[in-house]
Image (cartoon, rainbow, N blue to C red; front, top):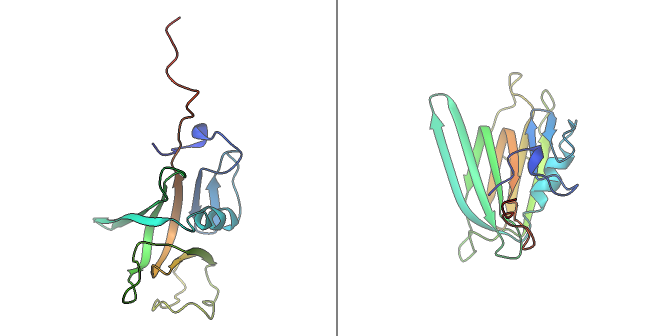
Length: 167
């Protein structure tokens, strides 16, 4: 089961963080955040995970990309859910493990500013582009540029909790 909103938060660590343009919303405290730092920290929690699934769909003019990350029974699954995807690439070097993610990086690309020097994606910078988030993983050779990014973390029940007996 994945956290679907503020009510699912059990700790002070954000379980759901959504970046839309230059504003980030969500988190356990329900407050609006004004930068991508929380999204970048949530994405960095995928370090050491493996890519479990990739799903992309296009319905009419809307697009959605979901990438699931799995560690195993010791850590919660994490899903990156993205909309308004401007670029997506997944590849690997010969002999490399396609699924293993050693390092996840997220870089904000503010609207109206030039691309950073290290940005090698063939995406022309036009005035009508919104603020974007550039996500990449190594050595899995994963790159995504999207305007809307939601990080979902699996919520696991503790062994102590369970159904309450009828009163």
